[in-house]
View 1: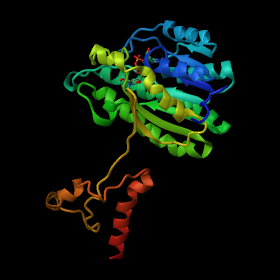
View 2: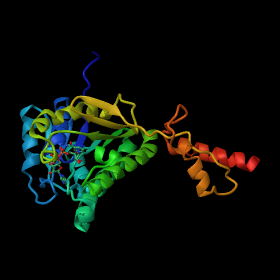
View 3: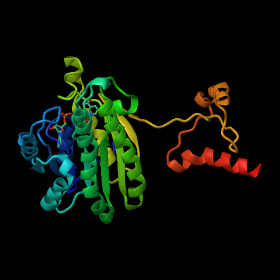
View 4: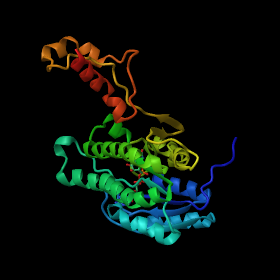
Amino acid sequence: MSPELRFDGRVVIITGAGGGLGRAHALLFARRGAHIVVNDLGAGRDGTGRSSDAARAVVDEIRALGGSAIDNGDSIEDGEQIVAAGQQAFGRVEVVINNAGIRRDASFGKMTDADWDRVYRVHVQGAFKVTRAAWEPMRQQGFGRVIFTASAAGLYGNFGQANYAMAKAALTGLGRTLVVQGARKNVHVNVIAPVAGSRMTATVLPPEVTAALLPEHGSPLVAWLCHESCAENGGMFEVGGGFFAKVRHERSAGLVADAAAPASPELVRDRFAAVVDFGPDATHPDDIGAAAGPLLANLVAGAER
Ligand SMILES: NC(=O)c1ccc[n+]([C@@H]2O[C@H](COP(=O)([O-])OP(=O)(O)OC[C@H]3O[C@@H](n4cnc5c(N)ncnc54)[C@H](O)[C@@H]3O)[C@@H](O)[C@H]2O)c1
């Protein structure tokens, strides 16, 4: 196997790193030489409460291993302060792993405004605040790696998680857009949808599954995506329990109707099979330009007729 992936001297912010996946990421990066900002609000699973103990305990673990870390107890909703803490302690920030999160599940009809807003504020606004504060410095230094932690619920939907799925899907859209803005400056952005046994899943998974799904299974992919030698940018990955896979959009070849005038609903009904057929001509558009291709080609063909 080729030489070990090292992060010597790299400054890595990991939000929500007081437990679960974030702690596992922090320990892996620290073992490989990075300086870690261990951020954690020390909130309950639903985002209520606050304690600096969780972040501090992980910093103690890292220091006991001979690693370098500081703790930070700010909410990611105050992301600027977290980035400033990293810059103050270590001089710069090079990797941002947006990991902090909460759950406030409820069936959709019973979901309160507070459940919806709180989940949005932590996952979406929090990741936005932390990443924005680190963004220009990363672009200016010509190196940066960002991870957004999404979820299968955001990709596929899940009962009782309308707020959580909304927030996680927002992070995939945010990630895809930042890819376009960071690529030329060697700032790469990738999205992971992990599955891990943690306090977050302890109430929904059987205990033996929770115990087997070690959070540490998620960290090797995160480490590789954040390494300077990794060219991957804009990827979306599922990871957990030793399973690593990339997810992409698939689009049917589609129904191409006359662009000169809107089609009738009956035409859509009668040729709906073409709309939904993922036959051999299905494509996997990778960016918005590629996605717009067939539509624009149809307009041009219509204009030339
Ligand atoms: N465990 C899974 O199977 C799973 C699945 C999909 C997505 N995820 C996502 O992975 C991430 C980590 O989850 P986990 O399973 O390790 O759960 P976890 O509850 O162990 O970790 C989340 C951490 O985020 C912290 N946090 C919450 N609000 C915060 C805030 N405002 N500011 C700073 N820190 C805050 C919590 O204190 C907690 O330590 C979350 O974003 C979660 O949504 C987890």
